[in-house]
Length: 225
Ligand code: CTP
Ligand code: CA
Image 1: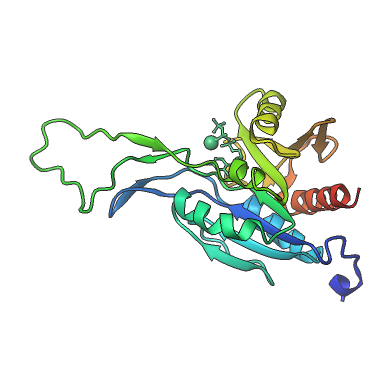
Image 2 (image 1 turned 60 degrees about the vertical axis):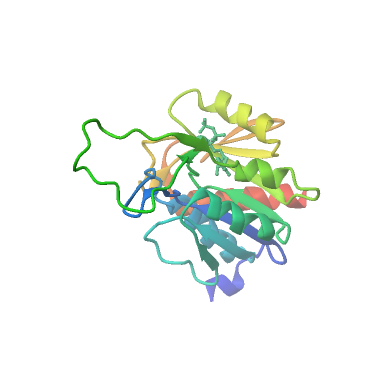
C-alpha cells in the first residue's frame, strides 16, 4: 500500500547497474578478487525499482538476494561483465557502475590446477589490463546517463573529479573505502561538473538503503532537470 501511494520519480526509466567484485581466474580452482560486497549496488537496484524504474542488475560473485522485481544477470570475470553490459547499455536510460571491476587479470589461464610439487620457486603471474566498462559505455554514440563510483582511501574529491574527467561521465559518486567494503553504513560524495555535495548532507555514515534511496532521488532530479 505504501509503495502504491508513494511517488514514482523513475516511472518509465530503465536503469542498468553493475555490482559486486569480479573474479579473475588463475587456474580452475584459484583466482584474484576483491572485498566488494555488492551491497551498495543491490541497494541502488532495490531503490530504483521502488522508484518505478525497470532495473537490470549485472552482478559479480556475491551472496545477496535479488531485489524484488529486478532482472539479474550473474557474471564472474570483468570480461564477462563487459560482454553482458555492452549490448544492454544501449537499451537503458541510466547506467550506474558500482562494481569493483578487477583492473587486471592473469595474462594466461592455466587449464589445470597449478601444482606445488616439484616447484623450487613460487610461481609468478603476468597480468593484463581489463577493459574499462564505464568508460566504454560513456563512449557509446548515444550513451545512457552514466554514474560512476570511486572508492578511495585518500583525497576522495580529487580522485573522484579526476575519474569524472577521465571517464567522461556526468556524475561520480565517491566513498572512502575499504573501510566501507561489506559494511552496511556508508557516506557518499557526489562530484559533477558544478561541484561537490555530501550525501547525507552532514557527511555522517548512514545505512546503504537510505543512501541508495537518496542517490536515486538525486539521479531522478538530474534526469528531469
Ligand atoms: N570501472 C569499470 N570497469 C573497470 C574499472 C572500473 O566499469 N575495468 C568503473 C567502476 O565500476 C566505477 C568506476 O569505473 O564506477 C571507477 O572505478 P575505479 O576502480 O575507482 O577506477 P579506476 O579507473 O579503475 O582507477 P583506480 O582503480 O586506479 O583508482
Ligand atoms: Ca580500479
